[in-house]
Image (cartoon, rainbow, N blue to C red):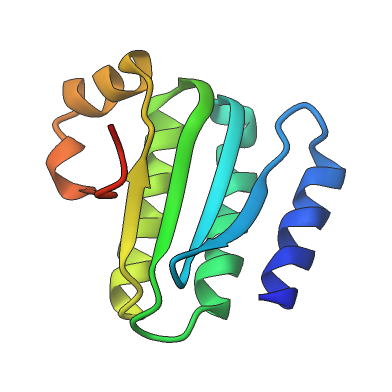
Amino acid sequence: MIRITQIVDRFSALHPETPASVAEERGRVVLGLSGSFDIKLAGEVEGLLASVIDQLEAGRSLVVDLAAVYYVSSTGIGALVTSLVRAQRRNVPFLVRNMTKKVRSVFDILGLLHFFSKDESDD
């Protein structure tokens, strides 16, 4: 977990307008994203997710908390889809939680909502 914390801290230092957070919750890694997840940031977030996924042992879950994400573009969704595929290849369960209505609607419009597992603690 120390390595993951360092990865997330480095991302947050480089992107203070859209910091990320990480915590351990019930044995799962919870990665909190924030801000506007648009074309300018999508590649950076995809890199962050790839680095975190690569640090997890097979079977350990990654929960991506989107509560503080107020906008997501189709490019941002693409980064999440790419990360989902990477996680599946590494046998790392990839869950999302706390999507705002606005963010959820983008997933729904693109027909991708059903590909993402919802964290059971999500409301």
